[in-house]
Structures are given as C-alpha cells and as structure tokens.
Length: 400
Image 1 (cartoon, rainbow, N blue to C red):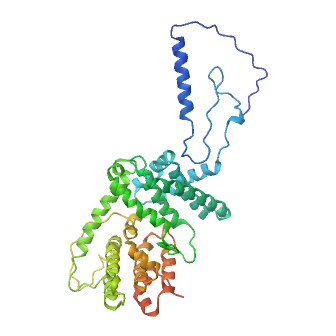
Image 2 (cartoon, helix red, strand yellow; image 1 turned 45 degrees about the horizontal axis):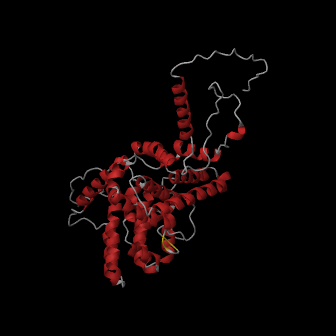
Image 3 (cartoon, rainbow, N blue to C red; image 1 turned 90 degrees about the vertical axis):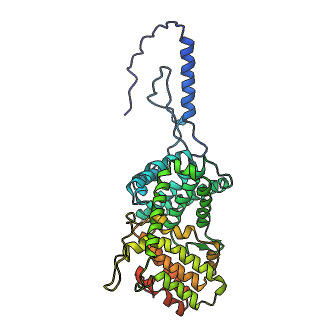
C-alpha cells in the first residue's frame, strides 16, 4: 500500500541538548551501524545474490519508499528450491523422526555457512521438483546440474585441505551427492558404481569421505551432524549383533542365498586368481543384507528347523547407510572387475539389487534395482543367468 505524503505537515524541529555522553553515544551508534552493515554483507560462499539491508532516514526510521537501485533482485527460483527442501524434500531422506528434523533444520544452517552445501541442497530440491512438475522439468534439471557442478568444483578444491572447520560440511556434501546421483535421470548404460572411465565420480567422492570420518571423528560426532553419526554407530552395533546371531545356524537350516552364490563362484569359476576379491565382496555384502534377512527370513521357520534365539530387534525401516554399507566399503579391485563386466562380479551386483529394492519407495531410488538387473541380465551368458534367478524373483523383474 502506498502512502500519500503531499498533505503531511513537517514536524516541529526539536531542540538539541548537549550532554557529556553525546560524543560517546554517537560513536556507539556509528559502531552499531557498522556492525549491522557487516552482518548483512554476503558471504563469499553464499550462492547467488544476498538480500539488501533496509535503508534508514535521518531519524533512524525505515524509508517508506526505498531506493530500488540499492536493492538487489530477489532470486525467487532459489528461494522456491529452499522452501521446497525445508517443507518437503528433507522429510524424504530418512525414516527416523529425529533425523528428519536434522535434515530439515541443521543441514540448511550448514548451507548458510558453506555455499557448496547450499548448492547441494538446492540441486537435490530441484531434482525433487522436476519429478513432480514435469511441465517445468527441463528448467529444474538445468538448475540442479548448475548448482551441483559448482558445489563439486568448490568441494574438489577443499578435499586436499580438510580441517576441523570444513570436515562436517565436506561430509554433508558427499551425502547430498549420493542422493543427487540416485535422483538424477538414468542413462541407458548407467551402472551406478562404474562409468566409462572407471569408478563413478560420485562413488570416488563418497569413498573419499571415509578418510574424513577417520581423521575427524571427534569433530564430526560433536558437531551439528553429531546425532546422525551417533545414530549410525548404534545401527552398526545392532548390525554386528545380528550378524553374530545369524551365523549360529543349525545343521538342517537351508543355506542362505549369499552362501549358495559363494559356493557357485568357488566351485565353477575359471577366474581363480580373483576368487579372494569375489569372496570379500560377498562377505561385505552380508552386512548390507543383515536387516533385510532379519525382516524377511529369520522368522520364516520350517516345521523341521530348530528355533534359534531371538536376536535384538533392528531399528525400524531400511536406511540408506544400511543398504549402501557394501558400496562404501567395496575394494577398488572388485570395481575394476565390474568395469570389465566379469560374470562373477555382475552376479554379485545382482544380489545387491535385492537390498536396493528395499529403498524403492523413495522418490530418489525408485526403479534403480530393476534398472540394474536388466543391464546385468543383458551382459550375462545363459549359464550365469541361472545364478541370478533368486535376485530376479525377489525383485519381481520379468526378463524380456
């Protein structure tokens, strides 16, 4: 609403009374104004333009009509993306209520302190909106790409100088990169873990953050993402107890699918020199399977089986870290074999797709398990296609 100032009478001039504190008051006011101006100065890491500070008149009152030339244009697109992240996207990244709050509150706060983190937030939100606003998909996709690439550029330069001040932000950006990779449109030959030039770029970044955790654990656990790391530690402890319980099988218990796959590779594979690599990959995959096995198999006892002691119940839901535990700890030697499309490495990846399917209800993961199994099927010969019948049946994919 505009104010008509034509009939407003000027106020009477107030007399000035000298005081001993006058100079000091003026100095303090000037200092406060300087601090306010400094506080509203945009950070070099902040994405896009900042928001202008209000203009004040001689009486200290905000001008009714600010000088538009002094106010930068609002970037409404980025504001829309941030609003969508806080009100929608953040709730889709975890099943635990406390962790949802962390992703909604703590993560944006880190984004305001570190521009590359905010880039990751905006990129993921843009992908989310592209999915549910198809009429504007191209626009949102271009925004997602631009924000993430700029964030990657900054992050790459910081990885060689990890400090207690930036370790939390670097770890967070790698986590956002995982979600961004999964949410991005899939290419026909996309194998998720490996690309044309070897290990996928996103996996190279995420695996590199293991060094961040090892070298900066104290800072990470006491920082703004501390609740996330503590929750992960609790799930790790439960995973180990479940593994110990599941290893106590009875003689008449049927072999689990991973044991059968390991036997097939050991007994029939001509690639003898790489057997240790395949065995390590399968044993590591068991740790991603442990919650899946508990939910779906531990309580399916046959009449002839001997009841086993009930293990401690796992946390509700399948979390991304549970499923991708295998991916984060894969040896580079296995990834090199997967790049070569060896039959054994492809079969192991097909079994990973079973636990990947557990995350299919999330918008950023939907369809990945079927996509990978379809690619694996096309690269396997007839003999090794028999090896992956169990994953195919578990996923519900139908070969053409």
